[in-house]
Image (cartoon, rainbow, N blue to C red; front, side, top):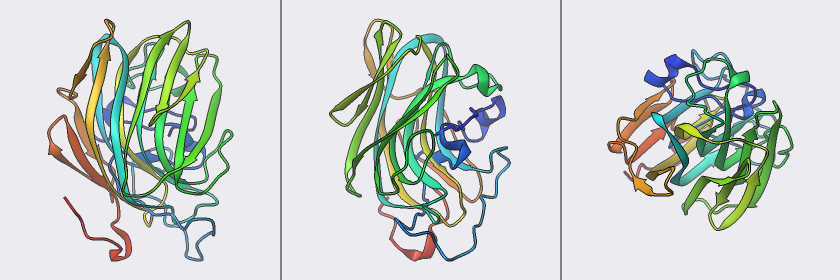
Length: 263
């Protein structure tokens, strides 16, 4: 989720994105992050060890193209999703879709627009106030406004399809599973897609797996894979392709030995 900043050019070779909740937190694709649900941790905060200007850690797959797209989708799964400090930070597993010509290489967040959707644990900003494991979606619109929307609670271990699709008339449809929302006014088209995890603390935990990466062309055709996409992570997060351009395992500090890796 970006708060007030988007990914810069260098992130293309490293992480892939910085989005929505930069104000409060961040997320990355297929990551490992932690969140003590509902109650702030008594432990001291340990900010992510990262070169990102917002202090967030990311583990993401990044796809940028020269031809316009009408949307993107991914299947996200998290067996563990815990923010170390849920009252002031978050961890996510999600999808970002650039809008209004954004490819996430602009280097100036004020000129980058997007919609992001996925699962989150911890508190966000711009309208998201819950701390439970849940769906969320967030957008930065060409009018300069930021909006966050809490969704239904999710069950860890489930596979959830999330997608963002151009609908015409300055509107993008946002799907959390089978539930649809709209981002408007928000212009066409997309030149960049990102999937993965964003986190704010080295002791966040997210045990996840992201797969079925898809994109939609301007004829309305959906195709599998993000060919030529770049995977990367900020320490302590790591990124591992399961199947190149198709599925990956991003994870951060696999905290406290809570779970055994299944992949």
